[in-house]
Structure formats: structure tokens, C-alpha cells
Length: 337
Image (tube, rainbow, N blue to C red; front, top):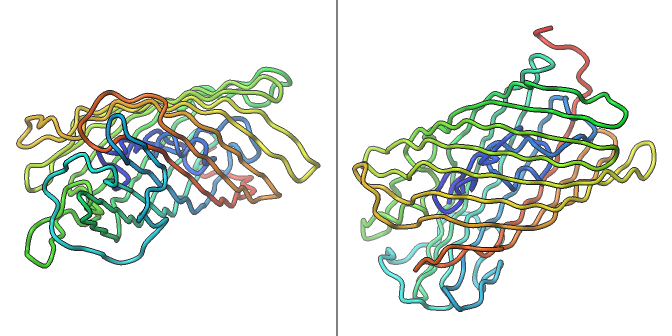
């Protein structure tokens, strides 16, 4: 699914790091995939950045079956299109899966010490396999733009540091949402690289640091629009908890391991404003992350697996992987004082 799809809310496939302060660490980015800016008190915490982020999200197996994060036949990032007949049903085949991937260029620019502007430009590659029939669509996804204001910013204390960010933004309908197969049948909504709708979201992030330890708690509420075929996704919410610890290696290097929890909820697909009951999301994910800082460069790694999921007759959430590389600028001046 695309950055903002039902299956990923965040995901967050959506969901705005599905909560977002952009380009922080992968740990935050995996939580919400919209506003990925909430990692904690780390180097370059209030600096402009540019980064490349890869997100992988999978759904596999049904209730009582195995749920592999990397299902057989699912490539890590296929290029191009691999299509057969349009998929219209599922019969609890244990080999069924859905995999959503995004390669994103992200940018964050501080125009003031408390005001940041962010952008996410994705290329998506989504695969679904049901009853042995597999389809993959790849292409430009929906771009996201948002701003965050640092309502509380006490990051220079010796022992206890705090930060609160509030903000909001929009996801634009820049990706294709009506791709068809060779028979002229349109592919499933979630397999498309775009949603065809303009969506808005608001978010809040609270970060607390005590000496070398800290936590970051983020919540995002997303208001989804409708495309020209009167399809939409119910409004969604995503919350992300990240507990981390700073480990200095020397003057230029440090690592930040973390433990993460992410909860996502959406009422599922809607047609003409009425919920269809399809692809409802109600999941709790848990995992670990690791951010590695070297000079102005940050390497981000994170993996989450399903901790709990409400019963559903679709393939179950199995896991999420996030990889990122960020360049942090030594920003000394701001447009706004």
C-alpha cells in the first residue's frame, strides 16, 4: 500500500509518521509513517535534514496460520509491474500475502528554532498474492507536506529535558489510483501506488529525556478524503511509543537502541461515504530500533512484529522493517528569529 493506505494507516501504510517530525530516526518513522520526526534527544535534534527512507510492511496468513514477515515470493523491492488477472476473492490460502514498500526522499527545514517544514516524496511498490495469483504495481506515490511547531522546547538541561511538538499537514493525490490489468479490470484499491484522494492530518509528540535515557510518545489523527470513484478510507489514528538510551562511543560516534510499540486503528474502506467493513485495522505492533550517528550522518534501523490484532478474515499483520540514511546540516541561522 501507499504511504497512506488502510493497511498501513501510518501505515501510518499510511499513517503519517503516520505521526511525523521528519527524518529523525527510523525508529520514529516506523511508527507513523507520516511524520517520522520523533526519536528523542539525539544529535541534530533541531537541525534541518535530508534523508532516504525505505519502509517494508507485510500481511500474511490467516487466523491460526503462520505470519511470516517475508512471505515466499515477496521481493524486498521489485521494480516495474508484474500483473495477471485481477484478484477478487480469498479462500484462506496460507500462501496469501500483501506487501507494501516505499522508498522515500524526505526533507526537513527549520525556518525558526520552533517551526519546521517537512516533505515526503515516495516511490511505492505494492504486491498482493491470493490463491496463487500475484500482482505487483510500482510507481510514484502520494506526496506529503506538513509543519510542526515546538510548543515546549527544553533540550539544554543537564538532567531532565522535554519537548512537545504539535502540527499538521496534507497528503496529496500525486500517485496513480486507477491502474488496470490487460483485461481492463482495475486492480484492488490497496495495491494501487496512490489513493486518488487528498487527506489531512494533525499530530502531537511528547518527548522526555532523563540523562541518557528517554521516551517519545506520538499520536496522529488522519482525515481521509474521497477519490473520483467515491472510494475512501475511514479516518484513522496511530500512536507510537519509543523508549531509547543514548550510548556514546567516542566524540564523533554514538548509538541509540530503542524499544517500540505502535497502535493503529481505522474503520476500513468506505464507498460513497458508507463503511464496507473491508480492511479494518486494529493492531498493536512491537519491536526494536537502532540509530547510529557518525559526524553528520545517521543510519537508522528498525523492525516491528505483530503483538496483537483484532480478528479479521484477511491476511494478518506480520511485520514492518524500516531502513534510513540521513544527512544532518549544521544549521546556525534561521529565516525567523
